Amino acid sequence: MDIKEMNERLSSQRSGGKPRTFQSLEALQQHIAEHKFHNQHPPAGGSRANDNGKSIETIVNNTKHSPEGSHRANAASMVKTDTSPEGSQQTNIALMIKTQQSPEGARGNNAASGIKIQPLPQGSRWTDIAPSRRMTELTSLVRKIHSHNILKKYRCPLGNCTSPEPCQGMPKIPAVALDCEMVATRFNPSELVRLTAIDYLTSEVLIDSLVKPKERVINWRSTITGITSATMASAEAQGKVLYGYKEAQKELWKYVDSNTVLVGHAMENDFKALKITHLKVVDSGILASQAVSSKRRQFALNKLCEEFMAKPIRQRPNATHDSLEDAFAAREIVLWCLHNEEALRQWGTEKKKAIEAKNRRRRSRQKQKAMEVYESTDEDSEIPRWSDIAEAAGWPHPDTGYDPWSD
Image: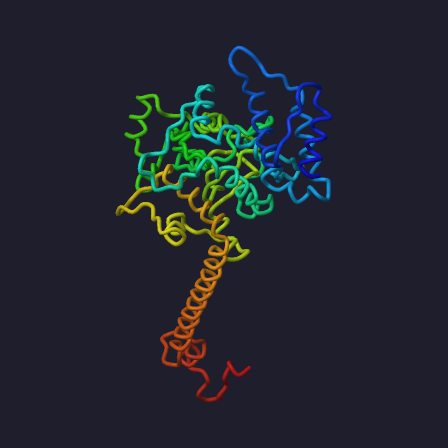
């Protein structure tokens, strides 16, 4: 179905008034996004009737089933975003963006909901996605969502954990980059102590808060986390902490629902600390590992930043982890992978060769060491033998010549 036929069907379904026509499929998609947004966010003092919005979306959806329109129903219009084994659903990416088209609109919408958002730090070295590019970037990201089997292979929690609430229409925020810091408590060697979440598309900081564990901390891992008991006490005195992982979950669910794409590095660790499960995940560590081989491998976040983008993190001597920096770094790696697929493949090939050469050298050293141990056990060795003991005991017998070792 082409744009002319869609305009004719749209005119026939309109109840009254002057028919509206569109010059391109993209213009129609934009109209749908605006129509849906205004219905959900009516202006003060009135509301907008939803008399034909449903029929418009139906017409666009039907283009997928016509031979002429199937090639137009690309990821910019309808993208499969639900990879759960229970089923799948298709969500309009134009609607997922909602107010992400402009940073001011995003801040205003969240402000109306009582959500405080921090802007991107001035002079930041991280990529700022222009509003006109956000739909394209989100579409590329959705295509990279890992399958259920891949998440299981990389040990992401998939059951017996809290999951975000089902999406009702548009996601709260289409994509969120996430990172956590952990400490050791009496009963948990990896207890959540800091939570950071940023908007993948706008780079705005949504959450960056310490989380006070319910149990007594036995190891703050201060050389890694940079957090001490004094740091926690100071933040608590200022009322700037979340209490326990459950409160951290509740804070995260303000921005995340079942259709939000979560981005991070080695996210199985973050999910275990938060005690959550989620099926829409793009992990920078998994992207790198799959580029090398089908085997499960783990590459350090700072090494990937150096090798992919020449943007090292933790540059100071003995620098500790910073979950805000790590969340931005994971986001940056994912963006690099999406825009440099051929370079990623080449890196994976070279890395695989380097790993195989390293393994060959290791096996050669082990074999050489084993040979040296074998050669050192010669006849002059101090290791006692049963024949030596028998000879010391007087065998063979000097008179009869009987040798019991010959039996």
